[in-house]
Structure formats: C-alpha cells, structure tokens
Amino acid sequence: MSSAQSIPLSDSAFIPLVKMPPKTDNKFVLLGYYVKQHWLSYSIGIITVLATNWIAVSIPEYVRLSIDLLNDGLQASQDLLWEYLLIMLGLALIMIIVRTSSRMFFFNPGRAIECQIKNDMFKKLMALQKNYYEKNPSGNIISRINNDITGVRMICGFGLMQAFNITTALSMTPYKMWLLSPNLTLYCIIPIILVFTVVRLGMRVLVQNMRARMESLQRLSGFTVSSLSAIDLIKSKTMREWSTRRFEKENQDMLRRSMKIAWTRSFVMPMLSNLEHFLKILVLLIGGMMVIQEDFTIGQLTAFIAYSALLTFPLMSLGWVTTMFQQGLVGLTSIQTVLQQDLPRAKLLPLTEPKREKLFA
Image: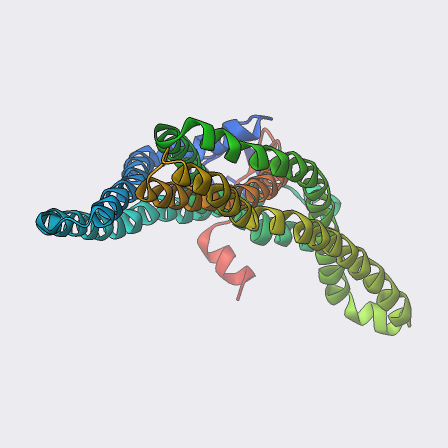
C-alpha cells in the first residue's frame, strides 16, 4: 500500500493514548469534561476547604470565652482559660495541616488538566491540514498554547479552590456574626453592598479589556513569529522600516489595553482591600456603643471584629477570583477554536519509520 494512499483513521491515530474531548460549543461543558476526571481529588479538596473554614470560625468563639473569662477576673477560672488556649492552639495546628492539604488536592489536578489540554491541543494540531496553518499564524497558535492554557490551569487549580473557599466562608462567617448580633451584622452588610455594586461595574470593563488584550497579544505573537520566519525576505526587500512600524503599532495597542486593565484594577482592588478598615470602624463604633450600654460584652465585640476580618479576606479575593475566571474562560473559548476544528474524513497513511528517519535526518 502506498504511503500516500488515503485510508480512514480514527481521531486517536496520531496519539492513541490521548482521548480527545467531546465537540461542544459550551465552554463549561468542555471545562467539566476535564474537571470530572479528577472528581475524587476535588471532592477531598472540598471537604478540606469546609474543614478549614469551620475551624477558622470556631477559633473566635474561644477567643470570646477567654476574654470574657479574663474580664470577670476570677482566680478559679485559670484552669478553664488554659483549656481554651490549648483548644485554640490545637485548632490552629489542625488548620495548618488541613489548609495545606486543600491546596494539594486542588493544585495537582490543575496541573494535570493543563498537561492534558496541551496533549489534546498537540494531537489536534498534528491532525489538522495545511489550510488551517495558512489561516492561523504560528504566533497565534503559540499564544493559545502558552497563555490561554495557563489561564485554564489557574481556573482548575487556585480558581476552583478559592471559589469553594469564598462560598463556604461567606456562608459560615455571616451566620456566626448573626448569632452574636443580628443588628450589627445588618449594619456590616451596607458597605459591602455599596462596594460590590461599584466593583461589579468595574469588572465588566475589566473583562472587555482582557478579551481585547488577548486578541492583541495573539496578533503581536503572530506578527513576531512571521517576521522572524521571513527575516531574509525583509532584509532583501528593504522592509525593515515597515516591519518596525507594524510591530510598534501592535505593541502600542497591547500596551494601551494593558494600561486600561491596570487603571481598572487600581480603582477596583483598593475598594475591596479597604473594605476591612470600613468594617472595623463600623464594628467599633456601633459595637462599642452596645458595650457601653451593656448589650454586648467585650469578648463578643472582640469575636465580632475577628469575624469581620475573616469576612473581608474572601471579599477581597472575590474580585481577583472573578477576574481569574473571566480571563480563563476567555482563554478556554480561544482553545475551543482549535479543539473543535473538523478533521478530514480520510487521512493520509503515516510515513513508514525509514522514510521518517530520512525526512528528519
């Protein structure tokens, strides 16, 4: 049989050990295809995240009991105080172990998914024909493999971990705050709503500019690789000035997009980071008045401040995680343009081993 004879081959003919993802226009279905293959690791990771947040909201309760015990000034309570301190120390040590484990069970699947997507991309690119490469510059493809897959890896690793962490923390912490003082908890919700209304608007602008920057980066990468490939032609035809102007134009366009992203972040992120200070001032003002009126103990006020600090960290992370997911999903859409390419119904029979050795000798 001739090496040029056309025979039907399956999609796994080039790299049989790699299973291609299903064809779908829904990026969440594609993401779920990779994530569900590591369901056991993610399940254990979710359990460790739940345990971490449960321990985190339990420690302030013992802080409250200890401070109220000290405020009473009873000598007979010394043994009980030591008991509370040992419990807090034990919980802190357990939280270190559990928190570290949660990162392992989320980060490792993220790296594995990154490797799998790169293998799938390589398999698909090896199967595509010449007309695809004529329409898509090499720099564009390189940008997708390097930058876009990295964004997907961030979603599958740190992004998913923080998503569950934020959801759990924003469920447990307000509940504990509500048990201490429903009125003070409602006061804390007011600045949170105001801040996130503004942040939501900022995120829309951020996502639009991220998508535009990704397209600009692909154009810049494509032009750079094409210029390097045709460097002899550029020199012989005295096209150096044109090439420099074109590169400068693409570079400035990417810089402009990056600066817009930086300006938006410089407005959104400080609002989230300063939210903690707003909450502390609010809690001290209203909670302090409640202590003076003897509606609140000093221990309860201290615990409430600790809970407000626990609340601000996931709120601060929420903006960054939202940006990460938006950027990663944009990258996943770009990856889909390669993975969802139709392959020819019949493929050429691969060259024999001697011919391959001669070709690449």
